Length: 208
Image (tube, rainbow, N blue to C red):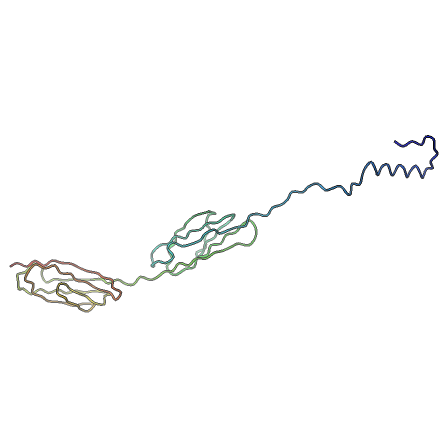
């Protein structure tokens, strides 16, 4: 509180003293620090932790597993064909590609651009296997010295063998003849160029 006892102050001097007192009492509000504001943190980035095919090489008609893992994702897309998957740290989905296919996994996070990874599944066409379409024995029971005929029709074969005659014939059709003197186990085998085989076994009983 200001007093003017014992002195005579002019009006101007009195006003100046009052102004100074008010400034000292209130302080400089402009220099006071602003209240703290909440610090905003960026969301964790989306990650694809794994993406692979098991197996990555197969024959047409077989199935493969596409396995993936994602973190901090809002959506996960697999293509082709395009379909949405669940957000998972570890999951596998089954696919049956009919040809060599490159799959793309795309994950989108809460912010930023989506990220992608690819994996290629190689599909081969199976080679046709040899097949004995028909095998005919003139008889499965005969007397010693009788003539036996063995005829065959085959497909996808390079050659056909008949054992124990040591016979090798063409891969489409043919016949062999023998006169067995004892009961014999015959094996007719169609053989492809890559070594694949198809066989028919038969026992011919021979009476003495």
